Length: 291
Image 1 (cartoon, rainbow, N blue to C red):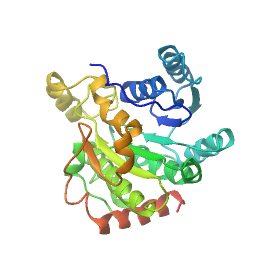
Image 2 (image 1 turned 90 degrees about the vertical axis):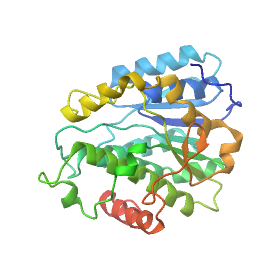
Image 3 (image 1 turned 180 degrees about the vertical axis):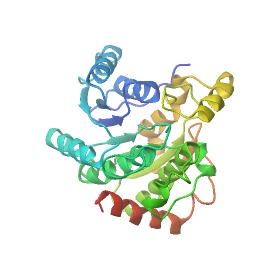
């Protein structure tokens, strides 16, 4: 299904993480088609360059897209990514925190974080905060973070030790926790940026048939995925809400909301907790060293 036409983004700079495939690639393509200069972020040089070329071919009249490499599971890499973006660009009009993983067996990064917590939550927390100067410089900038309905089953552990405990670890729980963190982070970010002109919203893209499932994903999650696959939507439809939040004029007047189907939607009571959002911010600042 084609994404509906949207206003021009001429003169706008957009950064999309996880842009080499799936929702991220469609998002990058559609925003480029609207005239934006798109910066794609990916982990692998060949896949990222291939995605960049695909976006350029789909939007030949747009500014030439650029590509940056980053393994978002490490905060040191996220710092390097933000620094490189800052060297190339003075402002950022739209940041799309799209990258995410479905975890498998418990994996601890060399910085000491559970892999999905690091990639799905700490990375967007760090990247967004590091790019706030460029977002504020743009004026009416937007931060769009891809969350999930899985957040309804999530909770926020207070300590790194609890998240890393092999006796308590569940890949499904870890994923749900990270998606709850996406929404709480977005809500707190919207509150903190209330008077800057920068908006922040999160979204559920739908149950999308993407490459989220990988060889490391647990057997349980693979089974659930395959059972649900007949009911999934394609990536074109899955990207619609992200593109809406990144480009629609009416979305630029809304902040701190959770969206489904390009409309504000209900989220869990935990996701709406100001106390939990503030607590998560403190935890995240401590774990990333970024306030």
